[in-house]
Amino acid sequence: MFVRAYRADDLSAMLKIWNEVVAEGLAFPQEELLDEVTGASFFAAQTYTAVAEQNGEVVGLYILHPNNVGRCGHIANASYAVASSCRGQHIGEQLVRDCLIAAKHKGFRILQFKAVVESNLSARHLYEKLGFVPLGVIPEGFRRKDGQYENICPYYHQL
Image (tube, rainbow, N blue to C red):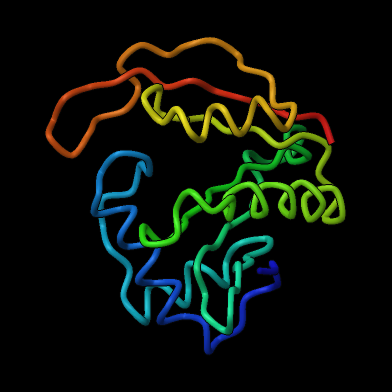
């Protein structure tokens, strides 16, 4: 498995993975699914978009972009998605590790996650393993697909 910059011919696989996470309603704030047109525009608009490829198949992806503008433009944000059929294989870890390198290469100084859902224990464990610092808890900061509210836990990593 290796991580590389996405290509236009990856779009179909990327949409499937991204939309699967959005439809689950447990981790991403987005509610609208992407199609070929909106997805191509969305991924192209990021500072950097990468995919995890395993045996010629796209099994995960991440997007990297500024968390803010101007005087806070040196802080990046990222989102990660792994195909449900491939979870538990450390693909997410490889995506985050690659993202840390890419963020620094793109001139960012900090990688910050604003909305890690408290119950997403595998992501939280991974971030802490990789040196991300938890910043506390925002009560009921995430609305789940079922309408229930859940806490979010922001994290950051100095690059």
